[in-house]
Amino acid sequence: MNICLKNRLSCREITRVLKELVIENFAIIQHLEVSFQPGLNVLTGETGAGKSILVGAVNLILGGRAAQEMIRTGVQEAIVEGVFSIPSSDLLKFAIEDLGLETSDTLVIRRAINRSGRNRVYLNDQSVSLQQLHQVTRGLISISGQHEHQLLLDPDGHLGMLDAFGKTEGLCREVKVAHDEWSRCREALHKLRRFRGEEAARLEWIRFQLNELESANLVAGEDLELEQERNLLRHAETLLDAAQSAHQSLYAGKGSILEQLVEVEKRLETLRRIDPGQEHLVQHYEQARIHLEELSHSLQQYAGRVSFDPQRLSRVEERLGLIHRLSKKYGENVEKMLHRLSELKESVATGESVDQREAELAKTLEKRVQEYVKKATVLSGVRKEAARRLQDEVERTLALLDMPHARFKVDFIGAGDASEAPEVLFAPTGLDRVEFLLTANPGEAFKPLARIASGGELSRILLALKSLLSRQGEAETLIFDEVDSGIGGRTAELVGLQLKRLASKHQVICITHLPQIACYGETHFKVSKVSRKDDTTTSIHELPAEERVHELARMLGGISISPKTLEHAAELLEHGQRGKFS
Image 1: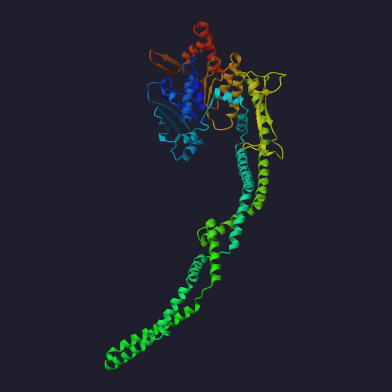
Image 2: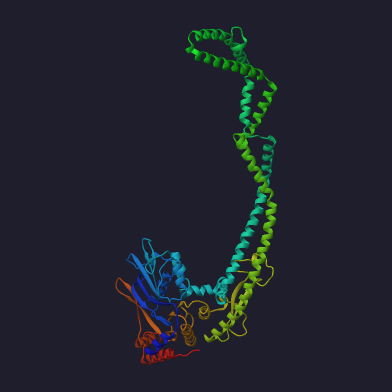
């Protein structure tokens, strides 16, 4: 039987496989190593032995939340390591290469959690962040347990399951992009309209300020020129007296300086006749006389221009007063006030362009609505076709799981096929709202899963959906915890057979308490808990055929195992390993 099993496994084409799981100081596990095989791996053991701890450890290497409570009592650090085989053509390698990491046919993920809070993550011995770990492990392992039972009851998760079955990823991305563009345009329009309301009063105040500055007819630099002119007008009498007195002393008065220079010229002529070498003194005199004459002429002209004009002084004072008042509001000088004037003109222009901008945005928003509705309607049509196929497939699979009369329905809520839809229906996921409905018996009406499905029915529905969804993408490893909840007997046998079907294309790891399921496992592990005086540890080992019979007998007969129970267990194992399916 083992040779046949190995031959069967070697022929199976399974891509990703969790080859090995190593756990140290995690919960009650001190040290544990387990090598999983392709196909159906079953884990059994007494309640509380630590089977679900293994699922928690796998969650950790997938990037799940880490807590100090996970670390074994008395130690500082817990380590979980998973070894996966990754074929060269697997898309996962591209995700690893995108992170700048080296790739091979083996992927080793190791995560260490420490009581100090310094947690570490490694991919092929290369340190990575938790976010990078999430990028790599997406689609690597799917864990189905109590959490997914709860998700199955929540209608909010049903649309995602339908999209996964219908392979609508591309259409979903297009709809999300269209929704994002519509949402941004709508928000911009709402913001603009709020701006108009809030800015109405401010714009009126801006126009008042603009009018005040424009009415002033300010000229660059005029404040400095007016200050200088005012200073001259205030001291006109003093300036006139100074200029006239200087002109009198220099030229017009009796005994003026220029008149006295005539005597100086005579003396210099005498010097030059006697000593020709003093010619330069005469030249200096000529230059001095010319400069003094020019000075005298300038003083005369300046005195002619100086006049005391009280009216002009009053106008200058008034203009400077206006500039001073405006400077308290708009800037300390004319240059800054002119800059403020430019800003006010720009603000008014912006405010006046709001109407035009609003009309443009409204037109763009209408276009975005049409684009979104068009793409969302196409997506809705594809979803409805996928829903019809999903309904048929789920019902067919449920019939194989001992629910031959069950009817499954994907109920569409809303107006997914409407050419026009109210904005309240717009969502990044499209116009559709769906909910899974079920009727388990003939004559009963369809009802939501939360109101009709028992634990056993939920387990089978989840298995049916997992079986169907697993066909859609990469061959991820599937872990089932509590898939046998609420079932037994014939139904359990059919669930085991369905798991075996699923394991023909996927590596499946199933934690179960039912021998009718465990007998179908191609590899069987037993989880045991050993309690000592001050210590409790969990161990796991692969069972050979003979030990499998005893483990199935334990699961069948409880504490007391009779020869008949062993015989039944052997028959069950042989049936499970020989089981045929189409």
